[in-house]
Length: 374
Image (tube, rainbow, N blue to C red; front, side):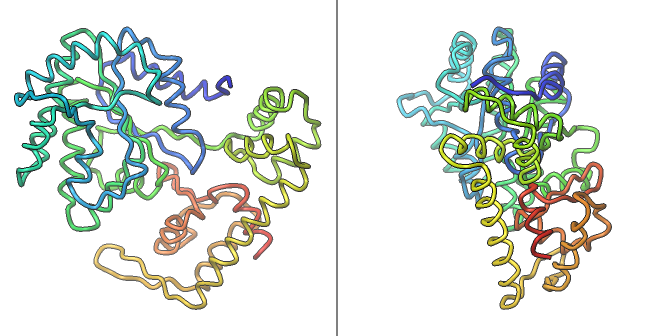
């Protein structure tokens, strides 16, 4: 199916790629807002492949609790290679990648970073692994530059490594950021895009100052109403081979808003279900989940840690916070105590935009559930 919209974001990212690498770009937004789909469209269909070699590292499906897990995510081990010298391997790999980067049919966004097994094993036998890891990637990217192409490094759901930070290894996150700064702002070797749906992770990066002046942020948000209605027309033409009435489109928007994934699911199910039944079931499921979430607060005493302080989350405070959304979709973060909004974000109920300091439900469905329950 043809890609829909996001021309503004596509134009911005293509302009970034045409410039000298100088920043780390964090692409963030609510769950299922289309971050991954946007980057896939750019890499697969909009990119001048004669200029770039994209690499894609997926952290989303991994529970990364230590440095070894992290390193395993970075590479695809070349089991057949007997090369022990990473420089020799990187030179030959760079030449191969420059010749073959036009063919991305086997990859969503880009190629994995290959590494020879002897060198990979050597890394794992060392106590301090990250230095050799970064040295190899830096050398590989430098060789690709020498061949006349620019690497693009895409890190999907990078926040998965924050578990290591919570376990006391904050140095890994710091060293990774410093390495990404070296690739971009210092040596201009590589474009770096970090994708994340974890708004607390983006807030942490934005507020700590570790990347001040070295990072920028691209919001991929849910569609506004006008774009949502056009998206419905686009999907109904492609999936249903018919036009939706204005009343049907307004009804869909009143339930699911501008969430691309939810809109797609509704129209796809219209092939074999009545619209009203689809929307009613979706809302009932969201109401049920929210009711169960609130009921559990009668029996458990959740706690979160902020700095050195452990704070208990009280049900009355959660309800008070959610009631702020009875009559509006977005509120200033200062209206909700920090421990409460952190807890609700961790439960995927709220989304924080740290750049403008606002909170909103993760979806229209959740917003509708809040309004009906409270």
